[in-house]
Image (cartoon, rainbow, N blue to C red; front, side, top):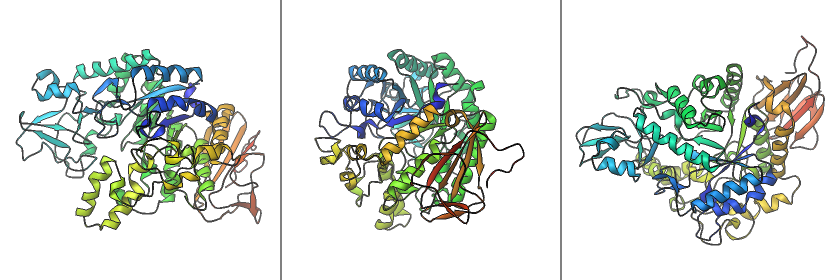
Length: 557
């Protein structure tokens, strides 16, 4: 069994995790300070978002040197200490590789701007006049995906910010540069790699206008993507490591190929379809209530599809690019504790490898900002004027940011009720939510019924119970609105998991309380009504029994 099946991975956004030197920015020394906390939590691997040298226009995802550490985060000595001390505690470390693009301050791009042919071919440049971009493609951060360089008489492609120039993977020299970067960090002791928007690296042979949209259909899961991944993994010698690809606007079919062991590409993949169910007409910047029926169907489709095709899911609700799940899909008020636990159990007991984003184990909420001046995220600051130009009032645009801004996931980790949530003794680069006085790690360690201790139980279950790490999955009660229920089964044993996704009680007609041992739940005892299971607001419960029903016997639901 690949070791990642029974592991839980913890994502650290270093800038917001812990500031050890008082400058208001989280750093590597701060991560080292908290390794005992992470070991006690029980996780197996730490994924750190980029801390490489960068102008930080996109919080480190604009890398100017893949082999140097940005001084705001620390030094190479700090990295070596982190790798050594994490290993001593049984924790692997996963680095975040941004290989779709580099910063425009990278030496490669600077030499391209000087007109050096070798480095011009490291990027995607196209000839043209200053008023006519090569295509009508739209950047994911707003505006054209092309930027004009007057001294060259050329445009370069940037699918993200204009300071993030897309690399030309068609050039074998580029691919060799990237392999050498992976070898360097593997030799340092890194145990895994996360690849940022990696399914966008293969661009079309011909660039043309997209009359149907923003251009993504031309480069998403592009024509040579599987070839490139196989080559990268094999030549860099990382096939035995834990690897995960962030997949933008991908398909189930593509992700099963990316993660099927026979393909020798990646261990697992992130997809984001389930995090778009509250996008009105597919637009992130238009609000609607989450479509829970759609959410449930996406989980069913991806879980069963990956299972049948031999793929492997990365399971998650939160990351540095997403709002906090408890504010988005739960209730960050009266039912914060119940809904945070339900959301955790819902995905942690599925088939796949779960990821915890820093603070998720505490039930941290969205920031609750009320002014544009409180935001720092380049995407949010770019889209605010776009929303105003589209006719939204100031209040409407701020409400969209309050719910959707990436800064919601980037507020300081809430360690204690001390000033600035115990994150820094200086002035934090971004404000913590005001609720840190009550929602913090120190308080939750003292509360046996806390969200934190519930996460510890989930992590331990995955390690100790093969039903969770290896079992197959089958969905139950699929026609019951608001209920996501499933059965995991392996070698004659089964686990029944029931989740109420809503704040209203749900009577699951014809579904009795499952027999067997109740492994965990967020209410003390199971409830029934008329002999059928009654799920209270945001209730989750899991039962295990040793033997499956006799052949041909009907399953509950």
